Amino acid sequence: MQGYQKRRLGEVVTNNRYLSVNTDTGAGWWTIGVSETVPEGVPVAVHCESVDLVCFRDNDGIAHTLLDQCVHRRAPLSLGKIAPEGWVECPYHGWRYDGSNGRCMEVPNLSSAERVPSSYRVPVYTTVERDGFIHVWSVGDEAPSVDAPALKCGSLGVESELTSLIAYPGDALIDLLLDAPGAVLDLGRLRVINEHRFGDPVRSENELSVTYAVVDETTEPGILVSEYPYRLQIRFDCVYSSAVATLVSEDGATTARAVMAFLPVKKALCRVSLRGSQVANADDPSAIAIGLQAAIDPQIALNTVDYVSRLR
Ligand code: FES
Image 1 (cartoon, rainbow, N blue to C red):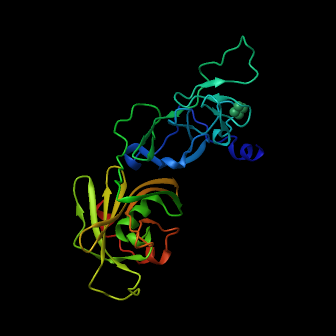
Image 2 (spheres, rainbow, N blue to C red; image 1 turned 180 degrees about the horizontal axis):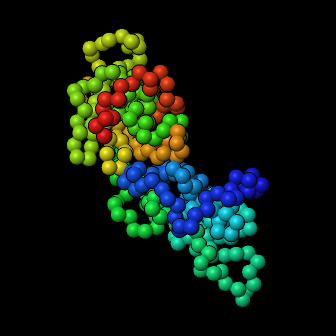
Image 3 (tube, protein in one colour; image 1 turned 90 degrees about the vertical axis):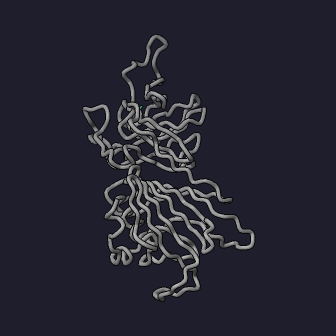
């Protein structure tokens, strides 16, 4: 506990019930991860821009999010555990909080004549689980003014998911996805030709889409080719800052798809949540899936022209 005291005391103190946050990202929703990132029985720390949160599931499996700060002495609740009642228990002195309203439900050592004051309450953040993603309303527990993002991936046969922390600023990462998707997406044995777009990007009221050429591993880097066995379409939702990448083969069949949400975590860190689906192919063990690069290649970032991203 000493480590947390050093780090925490005097920090994250506010006179407001909720900390001041930037609600531009995702129309006020933070997509904190795919559903699998919050397993049952374990509180999970979530960093959203300047706010530290704890997300956990109650005994019905419903995800709740609270400010990651016990009202007693501000210990991070994410270091605690889930009590038998489905409440989150502080690791320091064992106070327990109900995720649905943030109320402290139990304080150890209270006499039978004592009650926990109703003012003992941790700020709650409205949490919605939808399409396999967990979304947190960044303003707190007030009624959201817009629906949570709809990020349905749809099934092509084989599903996958991942949540990855990428050392790159969130806004710049989205720009890079639009201008040079090969820097962000990992297509396994395929390679996106970042310099080859099919036509101009198309901007509608809420969406920006662009299509790139994709070659396979037999094409040497740097070689100009005129035939492309695949195309990668990126559709970016300008309202929710989410994206759908679709890989289409020469004959027009969809081979793989991935739905992504971006959450700026710190100034130079972005959390990307991705659900993907690909066509099952028993004859091809290296069937193509859309994943994420482990790191951004600085050389690609350096050479990228911000053309498409200017439209968002
Ligand atoms: S700091 Fe949480 S119970 Fe004391």
